[in-house]
Image (tube, rainbow, N blue to C red; front, side, top):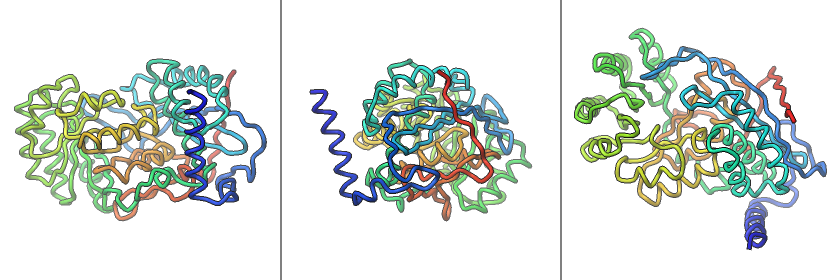
Length: 396
């Protein structure tokens, strides 16, 4: 049965590719330095490159601040094609550069046993079984596989999945907890670009209201709220939400601690605004548990191990009638381009991680009239920025 299932999956994907493309297009050269034709080495070769993302501004949420984020960039090559991935690891995820590389060293020999990169589901099941954690490191493999296979087919993933990029919602630009002067500066910047503004709240009532009132001095742009589990009392949370509803706010993300599920359900039932799960939503297994307690889920590739599981989370949430949001960490354009593939089926997109860093190494998705637009180029549509010289390697 396993061989038959493998054949059917492979045949289905290849049939889809054939329907989209001519034989010459399937093996056409993809831009970005890929080989013009297969080189005969049909092994999945994994390499990685440690990288430090430098923030344009100190980034503060309800319980921490930082000016850098550790990242490990990955690259998978197969038969003359290449795919790029990324593990972004803010401290609260519990992953580090060393832990990610340790995982990738373990994953590399397992990955080489697969002879067909189209078997992403089976490959990622194997990658997931290596350890119980390391979700961002796993995502770096998943994202690279999707980029690789998309390049081989010659199409972006939003098109392979049948999504319409014209349906992408307005993207949000994050304003962290900051002084009045910093809030004014960031709010003006976001409004000038036509973005929604995502505001990090969750400290004192005085500071939270200062943030909102300050933004309203310079723009009436719609605001999304992320309280980062900062409100501990459901009655206080409801009072804050009722006040925010008068300030052109359209969504509240993770208002209460993730373990306060019943209290959040109480809040969602009474809230005039949708309540979205962030810290409470890590992986596919969480979605059904959150049904009835939250209005919807925020999917983050670094938490759910990448695009394969994210696509399954989309399907389950849609079946349950839950709202969808695609978010990010502080990430380069590699992971942002991956998240953008799902943007067309979401009510909210919070894909601004690459705008928050000063040293991005790739470019792909663009923002047009405030909406993120995934590239129409194959795979994730990645192109390396000029002057960047990344040194990918694999330690045996």
